[in-house]
Length: 187
Ligand code: K1U
Ligand code: ZN
Image (cartoon, rainbow, N blue to C red):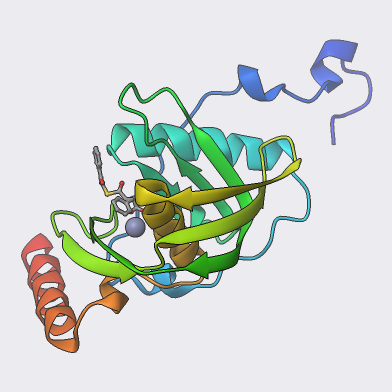
């Protein structure tokens, strides 16, 4: 609430393009906050658009090809991705839903929340996805290849699932031991 008596300009909400972007902290496995289930976004507000900008800046800086809000400890169903070589094709998915999936494909995956670890994961080869864009408009698309892998990986994050959950119990045990050692060394 802006106090009465201020000039007209001071009472106007700050437009999103005038706000500074911020680098957000990416949570690391096995942080329990990565296991929270994200809530649907009821409306694309200026606060959500600011989150999208901050998530995009964080993803580009990491660098990564995708980022789910869960990874920056915001438990709302928002994903950003950029699979382009030039890093100039930002994709935004709000409330994404996989409507259908078919086939199986194995692909090597990484995760900004599990730095330095890559492994093969088997997922659906093709998915049909529905989502809202940053203006709140619904759109649908078919995905295969890296787009299909990445959107499934990011939607998993919104449900509290990580790519390591798709690995064998032995690999997960080794990874958990590695994470505990890293935590001990960090103090
Ligand atoms: O969700 C995340 O943690 C981001 C993750 C997305 C992803 C990559 C590969 C397969 C499935 C999902 C990453 O971006 S890991 C980093 C990465 O793949 C990369 C980094 C720099 C340039 C190119 C790729
Ligand atoms: Zn990830």
